[in-house]
Amino acid sequence: MPLKYLTVAEDIERKIREGVCPPQSKLPTTDELCEQYGVSRITVRKAMDVLSERGFVIKRRGSGTYVKDIDPSSDDSESQVVESYSATARHEGHVADTQVLEFSVIGATGRVAERLRVGEGTPVYSIVRLRSVNDSQGLVSYTWIPVAIVPNLTKRNAADSLYRHVEVGLGLTVSSTHRSIRAVMPTLEEQVWLRLPEDVPVLEIDQVTFLSDGRLFEYSVLHRDTRDWSFKCVNT
Image (tube, rainbow, N blue to C red; front, side, top):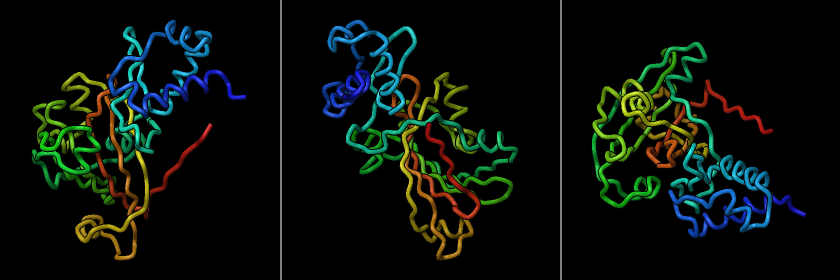
C-alpha cells in the first residue's frame, strides 16, 4: 500500500500535469490540504517536500507553496540547485574565462518560445558564449532570456556572470534548474571553437532555470567537451 504522503504528492502532481493547478498558481494551505485528503499536517509537509524535490513546486516563505512555471508534459522534471559556471570553476580551484561570440535581442520562435513558455515574437536575449577553464576549451553555451524579466542586460554582463547580474544587480534569486543530458555530434563551428577531432561527440545539456519566485527566466543548451569532463551523481 503506498505511503499516504506519496499518494498526496502523486495526486497533486497529476493535477499540475493536467493543468488543474496551472503554473504560478498558489496551492491550497496545509490545513486545506489536510481536510481535502484527510491526512495530518506532517503528511502534507512530506508531500510538499516530494513535489519540491521533483521540481514541480516552490515554497515562498511567509506566502505559501506555488506551482513552478514548468512544462508539465516535459520529462526533465528533476530539479537541481544552480551554480554558475564561473562559481563552479572557482570552487574547484580553477580560473574560468568567457568569450561572448554573439549577443543580440531577437523574437522568440519555435523551441525557444516553447521552452521559455512565452509567445512567439517575445523579445529575448540570444547569447552564445565559449566557456573555458585554465585555457582548456570547455563548452559552448547557447542562452535565451526574456528581456522583460532581466532588463538592461549587456554584453559585459554576459562575459562576466549572468547569474551574478541577476542576483546582485537586480536583487533576484536564481533557485533551481531542470535539465536533460544526451550525447550529440558537434557542429563544424563547435569543432573549431572546442578544438575537437571529427569523431568526438559533445555532451548536450538542455536546461531551463527558475527564480525563487517560480518564474522561468532562462533557457540554455550547453555543448560540452567530453574529453576532460565527467558527470557525477549520488542518489540517496
